[in-house]
Structures are given as structure tokens and as C-alpha cells.
Image 1 (cartoon, helix red, strand yellow):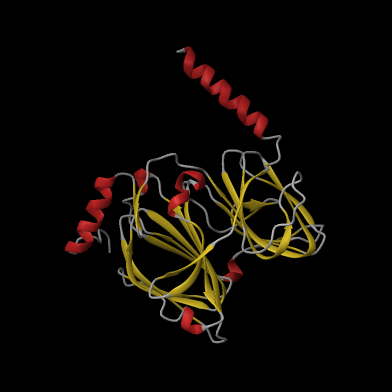
Image 2: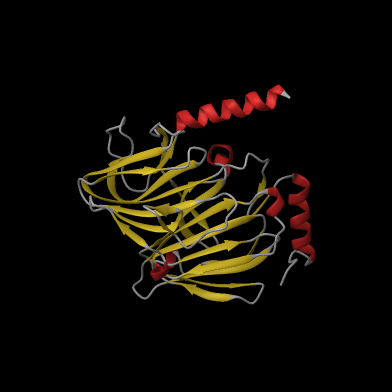
Length: 302
């Protein structure tokens, strides 16, 4: 009976250290260009090869273009099971339909948080009145016990996200999580995600507390800045900054303004079996999903 007590004491001691430590940078990564769907140009920030490193996050794509030919064919009907997809539109729109009969349009500044659960088939079609589309899609893994739950959507307009302005001039849009006691509308997710859209004017610095047990990353949308006190090298736009353990981050806009998303969540530490748009825990579960898709029994809840 002594071992569990010592183990808990060790965890508490480690947590105490992490709660007083700034996160330093583990790695910096640039995305690779690829085509997805019916020929949509995307920047694949991270994906299949990074599952252990990024747990519980599976994939991050920045999609869109100033050329309609690079996005207008969209992402025709395709299945998902075992994950959540978070689509955030910056410019243009994304029109969607799904196998439950649901449909809608994700407007600029809006987010669709889709829990695929046991299975959903949908299509996503970017469109724009100005000829420009830009957005992010993040895949978040579901715990094993939730992979076969009924699918559902959380759709939020831009006006539903609170924004906090700090005394230093930083503007923080809260999608999930909290800043200075203000909470975002997206709650009740098992991995406890925090998702912030942050703008720093030139010369502005912020320190933001993070859960010491979370995986934390930043993705730079515009400008450049430093992302740790011990690294004064500016990091440019379209860069992923992955953090080491700690309890807070320090980020500063240097010679230009800076816009980035700061995202964190609790790792699952579970096995992953992944092929295309379906992510399960075992190869048997994965093959069952594709067999059911071929046989027309993929959808469990309507």
C-alpha cells in the first residue's frame, strides 16, 4: 500500500515544481504544403507523424488561398469517427452539410466544434465573396470511452466569444478556457482544452498561465515575436511553437504586431490507430469502421 502513496507524493512534488516554472520552447516547425479534399491547398502544420509528440492533438491545417481555384472544390462527403474537429474561419466562409441532416455556414470569426463520435459523414465547402479564404482546422482526439458517443455540433458566431484587453494592450479572444476570470463558451470537453486567439501590438508582452499537465502550442498567424524569455530569436508567421513542461508562457511582439493562437489540452496517453479521417485505439476498431463504411452501417446515430 506504500507505493501508491509515494507515487502520489511524487506527482504532487513534480506538479509543485511545474507550477513555478516558465515553459521553454521544445521545437519550432514550419508547415508543409499539400492538397486535401478535392484539391484544396493547405498548410499541414502537424499530422500523422506527430501523434506521440502532440497528444491529444492529431492534426492542424491552415487552409485557404487568394485564388478560388485552390479552394472552391472543397472537401466533398467524407466520414469521421473517434475525433473532434475544430474549424475556425478568419476570412471567407465554409458551408457544411452532414449525414444527420444538419447544415450551416461558418462565417468569418466563427467556429464549428464537431464531435464525430461514433461516426458522421459530412462535406465542407469553402467560399468567399472577396476571392479569399483563410481558416484553421484542428483535430482533437477523443478518449477511448467516448469514441462511440453520438455525434454533435457546437456552432458559435464571432460575437459569442468574449474578448479581454489587458493593461498592456493585448487583445485575447477566448474560445475555450479562461483569461482573468473570463471564460469562453466552449466547455465540457474531457481533455479540458484552452483555445485563445491573441493579438499583441508592437512591443507588447504577455505572461499567460497554463495547466502544468497540458500539452501547449502556439501557431503564428501574422507578424513575429519571441515565445520564451530564454529565447530572444523572433519567430515568424506560419510557425508552430511547441512548449516543454511548465506553468506559464511569456510571449512578446518585437518589431511588428503579432497574432497567434495559443492552444492546450490534457494528453490522453492512449494507443492510436489512425487511417485517413478515422482515429481509433486499435487496428481492429479501425478496420471495423472502414468495413461498416463500405457496408453502409457506419452511421450509428441520426
